[in-house]
Image (cartoon, rainbow, N blue to C red; front, side, top):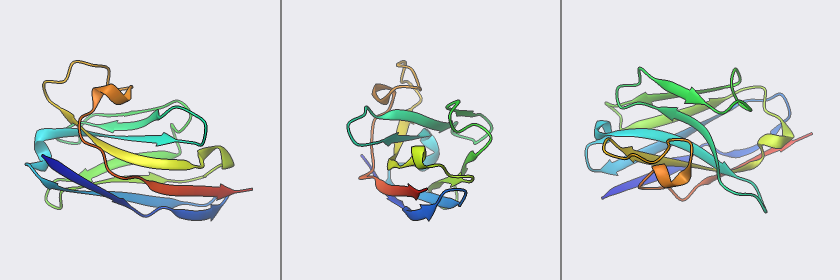
Length: 126
């Protein structure tokens, strides 16, 4: 069992920045790759970013590539999402999730992940 708690969301103007954090507890953090997803009202949950267990491999949705950076600190059991040049279209609830080593489902879809946090709201005003 893993517990995930996101923080760092808020209201920001377009062009601004936020850094989300996701603190994990329970099982060994570096047993898992991690992902960030987001869900806007009336829309499906969508992939944002992925990071491997060691942090050496990252992957991004095209919509955030070049603006968002995922990172992790295994000593602190925390994964981060640095979001720069924010746009109103980035407004959503952001979730972090764990991906088990043995998972075979796509890392780009929610069913490729196991444990989820409660989410943190990000609102970007124009």
